[in-house]
Image 1 (cartoon, rainbow, N blue to C red):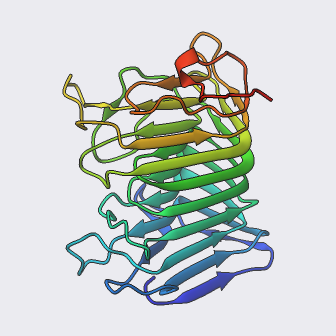
Image 2 (tube, helix red, strand yellow):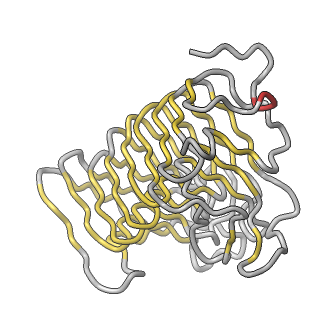
Length: 273
C-alpha cells in the first residue's frame, strides 16, 4: 500500500494466512518530504488476524531509508501469529516526515512481538493493551506511552543476542536495545501504564551481542528513557528495571515497582507514587 488513504471501520475481521512473513498491510511512504502520503486507519471494532498485521518498509527508491508521510491510526484489535506491528530496520530516516503511529485503545496479542520497532518512527501509544513473548521490542524510534497494559511472557535472556534480523528476546515488557545497523536513536517517555514481565524485568535496556558471540552489536547505547509514572512488575528473582548501558541511568521520576529499582536509576528529586 503506497500513496493511498485507507480506512477500515465497522464490526468484522480481516484475515491473512500463509507463511510467517505475510502481512495484512505493507505500507510504503514517499521519498519526498510530504505528510499524509500513505494513511491507514483501523476502527475500534475491527480485528486483524495475520502472521504480521501491519508492517512498514522504506521506499525502494530511497537510499537514505526514507518512507515519508506514513500515518497509522490503530484503535482496533490485532491477533498475530508472529508480530502485531513492525517497522523494517531499513527505515532509518529521522526527519520530520518519518512514519507516525497513533494507537488509542488498541489491543494486540502476538506470539513473538506485540510491537517490533526496528525502523525509526514516531509512536503515540495511549490506553493500549499488548500481550506477547516480547510486548514492546524496541530498537529505534520516538515513543510516548500514556496508559495501557504491556505484558511479556517470553524467556529472560542475559546477555541478550541480536541476529540483526528480528526482535531481541529479553522477556521484558519494555525492551530497549541498541544496534549500530539501525537508526541510532531511541527515545522513550512513559507517563503511565502497567508493565509486567513473567520471567524477566519489566523494563530492560542493553546492547546485545551478535548471535553465538561475545561481540556487541553497538558501540554505545542510543537509548534515552524517562519514566514519569506507571506500575512496573518484574519477575521477583530479577527485578523491575535493568539498565546496562544507558548514558543517563537516572530515569525514574515516578511510578510504583514490585522490586525497588537500583538507587542509581532515581532522578534527582524522585517522588514515588
